[in-house]
Image (cartoon, rainbow, N blue to C red; front, side, top):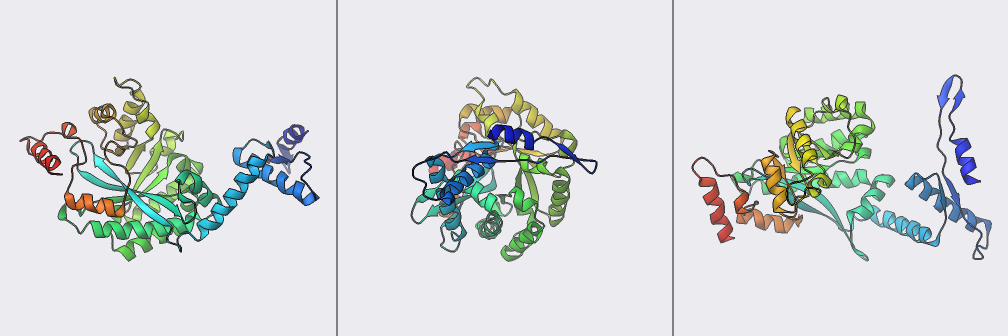
Length: 356
């Protein structure tokens, strides 16, 4: 019966000469002896309806597991509203490394939540809640201010670090909000960080949701002087007619394409294609998820500019990164560092690896 209702309502219809389509989500609560009032039945049917909407399935039947999941989500959303004031949020930083000479480009900023009761809550459990509830907006403002201030301090450690960048992920909800421009301006003003040291990452799927608006917003951000990166490339089905109009400086290859490379370099054709595409569009290329020597060697041979991943360095706390910066550690295995004309770079890195 629910499917028949769904199929009929979902049919396009004409209104004043316009073709109209609407969506419908149906939640079903089966009869259960535990129900005491009609409101109990409606509550659980409503939970199932929201689940159908989330999964885009049209119809969903209530289960007790759904109720537990729903209540957990409500609890997390309420606690997330106060997480900043409770000092439960923190930033971790994963190094971005040049794959040709091992120099440190900068860091990707990654949000962490240490809940006072539940401990560490993985990003995949709370980021989507933040986005759906709108909490991602104040959280991103906090992230921008934290990361720009932190990088400004790190740049002062040594002249070698004066050009380090920090990369911050921007959600689709924030990209569609004009306040993003002012939020970026405020963070740069408070931290006194050069705009060129801040990179904003937008996922490919988000960029393509409203391509014309994205183009307009990105050009406004570029006028501020910040750098822009298209994230998770290869998963969002970009239209090439739009891609060349998007003013990105960097293209980040999704980790799934790096992970699929075999020990003998098989399944590398897509990597090669993406890197060639980026070069033709005058973009730098970052590969994420580098975990093996084989992956690193292949990316170097294909001319990939930068990389990040567990082989190079895991995401670290602010304190741990600071220690690494003072140590001046090498970020590539010695055998993967390119030798300069006189071999000085190779010898310098070998010496540092022995010391640290």
